[in-house]
Picture 1 (tube, one colour):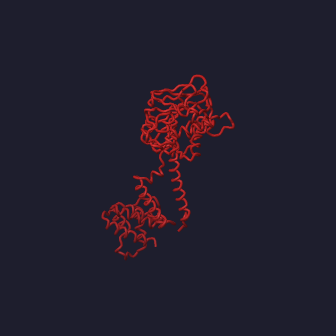
Picture 2 (spheres, rainbow, N blue to C red; picture 1 turned 60 degrees about the vertical axis):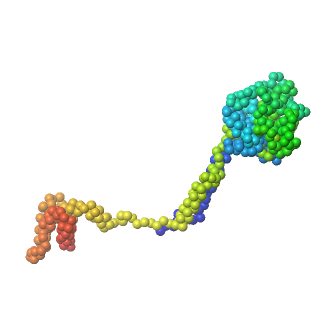
Picture 3 (tube, rainbow, N blue to C red; picture 1 turned 90 degrees about the vertical axis):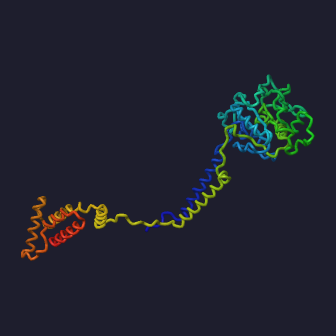
Length: 439
C-alpha cells in the first residue's frame, strides 16, 4: 500500500488557505474593490473639483465622516452632503432628499467645472485634475422652480448674508461664478451684488442656525448656540443648496476664509455642530454592493449560514478521520486465463445459453487434438474424426475397453445436445477422452 499523497497538515493548510481566500473575496465584493480617487467631483476626489479637502477638514474637527457607497448608508442620521455630477438624474436626487426629510438635513452641491485627469503634467499625482470649461447641471425633476446661471462680469469674491455679512472671501475664478434664483430662496452666501451662491428655501424646512444666519426670529424652543450639537429643528429638516461649488471644493478651500466659511455653512445646515456627516458617492457612480460577509451573519440568512458551517464542520471532521492512503480495491475481473474462463462460463450460465457452446466446444477439442497428435490441418471434420478414431483403436488393439465410445460418436452427441445437463455430461466425457489420447 502506498503512503498518503498528502499529509494531514498539508491538507489542512490547503483547506484553510481556500477558506481565507473565499472570505477575502466576499469582503472585496462588499467594499467595491475599486479606487474612489478618480478625479471626480465627490468626497473621495482630490482634484480641483473634488471635496476630499472638506471631508478631511471635518474629520480633523473630530466629526465622524462617512463616505456612503450604498443606498442604505444614506439613511443614517446627521447631515447628508450630495455632490451629484452634471449628468445625474433629477428624479434620483429628489428621491434621496425626500427620504431624508424626516431623518436629517441635506446639503446639495451643484457641479460647475468640467475636469479631466492632468496627464500632461509629469508632477501630477493620482486624482489630480485639469479644468477644461464648465458643464452646468440639468436636473429635471428636482426643484424645477430653481434656475441656475452665471454671474455676469467679475463676481469679486463672496460674502455672507444676513447677520453674517461680515464674512468675506475670494473665489478661485471670479470670471466663472454660478448662482441660483427661485421663489422663497433665502440667501446664505452671495456675491457683492447680491447673486445667491448658497441658500435654502424657507418654506421647505429650516432650523434655528439657518434662521439666525438670515436674521429670522428664533423659535422659542430653539437652542441659543449654533455650536450646540444637533439642535431640534422647528419644522422638517431643511435642504441647503450650494450653487457655487468653489465654496466647498478643493480649489476653493485653498483660501483660508473660504475654508472657515465652509465649516460654518456645514454647521448651519446641520443645525449646530454635527455628530456625523455623510458624503454620498452613489450618485457619482461609486456605489458598491452590500458586503456579503456581513449579510451572511444577519437575519434571515444567519440560520442558513450556521447550518452551512455545521455541515462543513461535520464533513471536514469525517474526512480527516479517514484521511490517508485509500484502500486498493480488488479487480472486478482478476487477471488470468482461468479466471477469464470462469467469468465467461458464469456469463453464459446466467444467460441460459449453454446449448449454444456445445458444437464450438467439440470443434475446439478437435483442433487441440490435431495440434497435439500431429494430424494434418485443414481437413473436413469427418475425416479428422475418422483419423482420431483410428488412433484410438490403435491405442486399444485388443478392444477390451467396450464401455468407452469412439471420439466421433462423443463429438456428434455433444453437438446434438440441447439440455444443459446433457451438454455438461457429454463435454466432460469428451474431455476425458481427449486427456487419455494426449497423455
